Each structure stands twice: as structure tokens, then as C-alpha cells.
Image 1 (tube, rainbow, N blue to C red):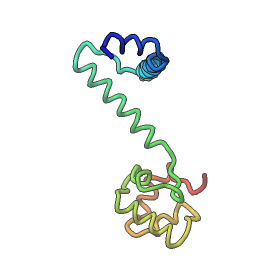
Image 2: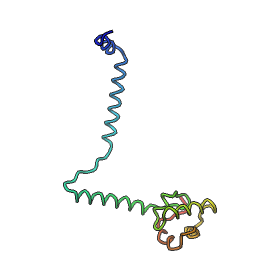
Image 3: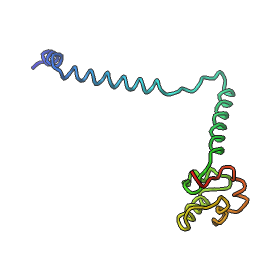
Image 4: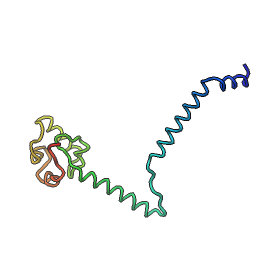
Length: 131
């Protein structure tokens, strides 16, 4: 069968129609995905762009620092958002929870090795023990 006859066979077959429909569907999905993402604004100079990025970062930091942290449920990542709590202290909190059970009060956090009353006081406004 030569190429021309094969081409005519494909055009007349349902296979080609199905493939075209699939390609159209894929292109539609890709275009819808691309159009739904929010583009960053354009800036006329680098200082304006820098100021915008710093403002966005400050908003994210503020959201993190204002969110409450349930010390009975928080994972290591959440615990490290607290002032004075790094990875090792977060792991100590989790270990304490596993060994002795849930914290009954926020002040019980000071019983964890390496965490004092000053750390508890610095974070008191964000600490929670219930959902």
C-alpha cells in the first residue's frame, strides 16, 4: 500500500478522528491550566520588583507567625515556626509527647528538655493545646 492510499485509509478510519479529539482535549486542558495560574505583576524597575517581593515575603511570614500551633498535634515543621524552637527542640517536644502523652497545659511545655519558661512566654499567644 503506497503512502497516498494509507493516508486516505487513515482519513476515512475512526482512528484518526479519535486521535484528533484526544489532541484537542489535551490542548484544552493545558490551556485551561495555564490560564488559571496567577502571573506575577510586571515592574518598570528592579527596585519596585524587589519591594514587591519583600512585601510578599513579609505577608507570608506574618501569616506563619500569627497562626496558632497545637503542641499536642504539631509536627516538626510547625513547631519550628515558634520563637526559639529549632529542629532539635521540636524533636524533643514530639518525643516528650510520645513518652508522656498530651500536654495538659501550655506551661507543661517547659517540662521538655531544653525548653524553659522564657520560650513558653515568648510563644504563649500562639500556643494551643486543643483544636
